Length: 577
Image (tube, rainbow, N blue to C red; front, side):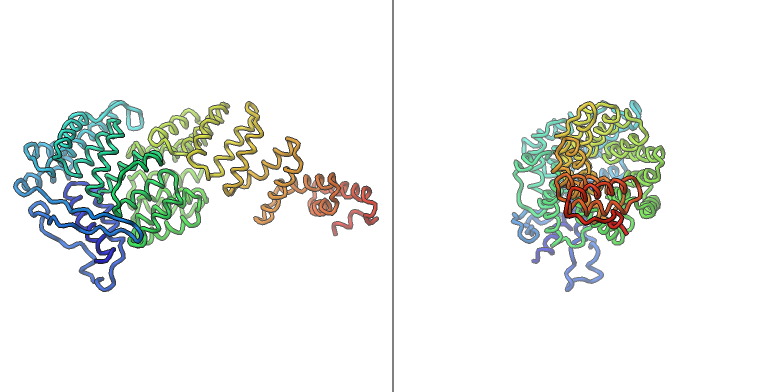
């Protein structure tokens, strides 16, 4: 059996099992990967492009033979047995409970299964109770604090669920889905070490549940924690590693993993979107834009990940493209957090910051843990000079994800606006720790060091050097390095950076006062060094300008003529036709 065919068979089985347990998010993810596998041309017929209807998974028993888990090329693997279903006698009760569950009547679903002892029934009953507790928690938050306020409300089912699932786990009466739920409960209660252990056991036993991998990823906040996991080498592990590398800001390693996975999952929109997000973090905006345009051609009603695309369009100031994207998501699904963020970005680019905040707030009403909305709303409050509100928004963002460099950077900006550079510096340091390749963060920290209260110019120089090495697209670092070295009395270093800045401005065909400043310094510096030929070149260029720099250049040329006895006796105007 080919590698692709084996992956396809595994995913088909997993989709049925995940859907049967109401794990619809994981089922959707598996289905997207299934259709992302390139079809075998010899078997590509219309009948093979759809899922085949089979007998009810509740009424029949799956075979206990093993499906060979075949990974992408070069990946070691172990085989994983297909789960055996246990619901034969009490299938009717399970069908009723699942129907209640699908109608979001979670407590009714749990009640129907109260006397069922099969592992699948136990899982669905516990999962229904967990979601009932989550639903009530959300209701209490709205009642007590409002949708955007902080609240101490908790899921009141967690204690009893932990007790029951712990007992089942000790007695070895729990399946991989029950382990997933147990890990989720432990994580919610703050027992992260045990949660990691339980989730690892779950994914090793049943590797196709992407929801379990996602929960495990949220607990891998450092590379050391990731390396400590004892994971079986199934091809699903490669998806996990690619995703967790991205979360840990290891974008190049993540890209390598995803590009390897594309060998089997050639048409996976998920992989394509993840590659775009990794390249976005690497600030490769042109490539990201091309990938997202291709994604929308293949999946025109896609909303997921399109908020990242809107960030690219915002950064590039593509008004018409962002307007079209906002209109598109409104027509597709207006009340999705991603849609609200896209519309918020659109109004922000138009300078309508109050309206932008309104849409970010709407996104947070739909999902209070939507990280991008908190961060982007903080940016809008900064633009509106409402620093207390900005600080609150950024703090909510870092509460959700302490690795979000944009929120740390925003906090630094806010405290700098309030005239508190020591606090600002602390937050800027946090931001560059999590995103050391972003020149804007190094420039912000350098400017903080330059403030009157700190005036730590040597430290500022170090930061500007890091920015210059990080592809400073705004061309700030080289100019500031030249000026700082000039202020500190380092003429050779200043000349070096002025020259580099001048070369860059010429390459980019930019004009402005920075060019005149660089030419003036270099002409004066080389004249003082008695390097008259080089000084003459810069003076001659200054004669092209009409301001006071022209007269200064003439004076410099006259001075060099006097200082250099062999200099031709001619009018200075000869240098400029």
